[in-house]
View 1: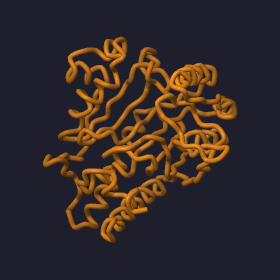
View 2: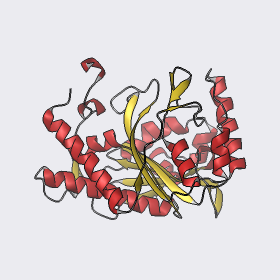
View 3: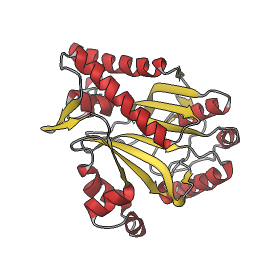
View 4: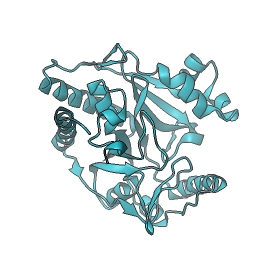
Length: 305
């Protein structure tokens, strides 16, 4: 169970995050945790709750709110994914998700950098640690001073794995190489945005206009840990339905049944150009406090219950 001091640190981070977005005229929303249909993702196994599912992300509902006329949204909520255990994973975790219409992933990277640096500075000030322009991770000092590094997926694979991202995909080893050879090198001295993923890994991101083989997707790494995943959002329901069908078929080969989220796809046709991002708040708290595992920064572990 988290100590009173740990609870104060967690509360400080949550307040700093909220204040950051409210000061930028974002609307805080809360959406249902239990949904009849989720966005199909073959690699993510949902947890069933009677005839519904605990959401794995608030994305489905938040995009429907954007399609209904909202322009800037953020949400802090608990998400649920079966089988997620380990130093950096839990089946129930705290997610920050936000969306901004009229933006691409470029502006979103800028704002993500601003948000992390601002919240880390507020936490450091309350802890009497100065201006919070750096954090300590595994004995290494990581500077949060601007600007943060931006590296394409292709450059990262060439530099740290000695092969192209396309070759890794062809060999069906992309995830393995990313986790074992690329990620440990990312964000060691300063945070790094890994961007421009192969279109096969686009998820819900739109293709780059000048290179449709790539997707406008990025991930933020600090100290070798993935903190956030963001996109320029795909707004074409025909293309998105095709991608979902592919995910549904992939999930079926693993024995997981997924349904097509038809209401979401209907709303997608009205979704304006926008960018969105999901950030793991438990992991961010680990970074700023120097904790080694998620269990060190959450109020209760499984053993406490």
